[in-house]
Structure formats: structure tokens, C-alpha cells
Length: 497
Image 1 (tube, rainbow, N blue to C red):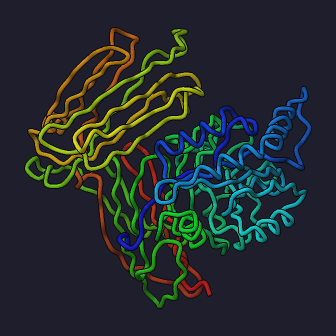
Image 2: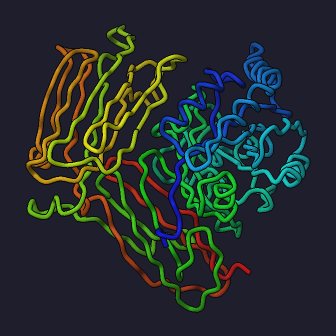
């Protein structure tokens, strides 16, 4: 089934200074183009039932709403000019807050659309249906009445998918990893999780997006989505979302293929007493676990190989993660930004693909991360790191290289900023262990080649048969890497007619 579609990666919920975040809309577009296939900017627009706050703190929100309204023509123009079909797609959107009904992200299929101010969720939905826009609830699991989702207002008409992961955390379940703790709306409420809503009979797919407020769409670790598209256009992306051919990611670009009786994720199928599940997962790190979840219960588990014989390790491309950053922390009162200039050269091998993993901080309107391929054997990198306001206190940036070669293939690294250094390691050496380097004595920044990941350790494929109960049933795929990054495939709904 994977061959029928291309996988595109995007972020359709993020913020900047056109609202109550930081950074220009031009910067957001440029950042998105650096490492994503598509994005939607969803500026903060309104909060009709906002409570009074001590000390007039609500001005933070009110002033942000005013900025978006005043600059909306500029936002419209930048997004409309940002599309390069077949290369990159940009969408216009806005976010509607509600204490009672939960926050909703509105994403338009067309350019130059208006902001819309509604005092109730029904009027907002009518507007979205008229515009053929998406209306996607996010940070679902906050308590109802505290901007968590209100499933009473759910309607498939313009809500084919819901956002189950963002910088707030994971709302698939109230027991899962990435709990809510970074904001003031409380912990996860069981009844507001995606699992509870599916069990109650609602039908929707899964997406992740960052909700990043630093003008950095696709911020690593804060949330990402994948869409299985027939063509690389805005229409193709919208069609995939409406068909629920989507999945949610925490950050690493795990590739999922998941079918039930041959139908892709998001489908609705008629099933008899049994259904056949087929799946294939290609991770960006060692895979820890792949699970098939039916009606809220794990019904099948699969594991990748945890030991690849040395003689077989290079029969297929391997993956190498280069990570840079670390450096001083707040207790040392050294809040510097470190600029990096890196060149990687593969000797007697080639770079098949690479996957940037870019954190959002530190905020800088001028600096950019850049990745420039040098043929199929080299990669030049410009980057910057700092611990200032880093998401979950991780300042590092990284890139994953998919390399074709053998044990003797050399990986040469030349560093010109922040210092001049050169190093060289063979894939054989990196198969045995990581290589850790430093730009100077403590507490200067460090960089690292992680131990390489053979294909057998990062991929798993399998099949299983499901017993299908009488009535409705749903099933989805969940994958977890050893580094903690996860993916959730949209459910397939059986006997939903």
C-alpha cells in the first residue's frame, strides 16, 4: 500500500508574533521550507469566553489577537506567495480559543480568506463548512471547561482528524508518555483523551503539530504530522487529511504503512468475523516496539532485531545521527548562542537521504539552519544552539543520514565554527560505538556521532489476524523507538456504516 502514496511531513498548528508568539510570518515560512513539505500558519485570533485574570494578565492574549487582526493582510500575502507545488505547500489558518468548547485550529484550502469571530462553536463550524476548511481540536486532554476538547461538539463534517500530540504532550491516553505539565490548564483528563472518544463511537484520524510559539514550524520533539498523498499539491494534502490518511509523530520521521484488509489507515471497511492487518515501520532510530491496538487494547506486538551480525549490517543502508550542542547550562550564567559550520563527507559510499531534527530555540529572527547537499557524498550544515528556553531543556540540533556503504566507508567531518576541527571515523567503528567530540574544555559545546543503526534494528514488518466483534470496531498502529520518539497511525474503522 505504501507504494500507492508518497509520505509528506508537515506542521499545521504553529504561531509567531502575528498573535502572542514571537517571530515574523516571513521567518515562519522560511523555517518551514527548510525542513518540511507543508505547513499551515494558525495565528491566535480570539477567545470569546476568556476568564478574568489576576493583575490584568489577559492583556497578553488580547494584544496578540489585535496584532493578528491588524497584520492579517500581510499574513495572507505571505502565505499566498509561499506555495511551490511539488516542492512546498503553505496554508492559511487561525486558532479560535474557547474555555468551554476547546481550542480549534481552522485551516483553509484556499488563499486570502477572512478571519472569522464566533461566540459559539456552531457558528464557527458553519463557517468552516461554507469555506470547506478544516476545524481541528488540539491539546485534547486538558479538562473540559479549561480549554480541553469538548467531545459534545465533535462533528466529522469539518473535523476528519484531531491533534493528539503537540508541545503540550500526548493526548492519546492518560497513561501514555509525554504527560501534560508545561502549561497551566492541568493534567490529562481521562474522558478527554482520544482513546475515550474512539471508545464512545466517534470517528477521526490522528495528526500531530507543534503549537510552537517561537515562529518555528516543525520544531523537533514538539509534534509533526505525516500525510499519505497521491500528489504533492495543496489539494492532494487536503484530500489525504479528509480521508484520514495521516499519522501523528513526536519528531523523528518514522515511516508507517498500515492496512486492514488492504485498506489504508483512516479507512472505513466492512469486515466479517476476522480482519487481516498488515504493517511495515521504518524508524529513524532503533525500534523498541510496534503495537496493534484494537478497541483500546493491545492485540499484537512486534519487535525489530536487537542484534545485527556484523557481516549483514551493511547489506542495506544504515542510519547515522549527528548531534551538536550541549554546552553550558543556566547555573553557569553563560547564555551564549553557539554558531556551527559543519561539513560531512562520505568516502567510498553515498548519502541516500537525510532528515533534519531541528529544535525551535534559541529564538533569532536572522539566524537560520541550512542543509546543502554536496552531490550524493557530502552535506554542508549551518546551525546554531543554546540552552535559552530550549524545549524540555534540550538545546541540541541533529540530522540523520541514511548512508550506503560498508565497514570501511569513511565519514569525515570538518568543523569551522565554533572552532576548526577535523575528524574521521569508519562505519565499522561507528557500528561498534559512538564518537564523542568537544569544541574545547568544559563547559564548551560538544558534538557526537551516535552509534549507527542497521536497517534490521530500525524496521519491522508483519501481519496479524483480528477477531472482529459484532458491531463497530476500530484498530490503529502505534510505534515507539528506543530514543522515545513515537508515531500513531490513524485508525481503520470496521463495520461503521
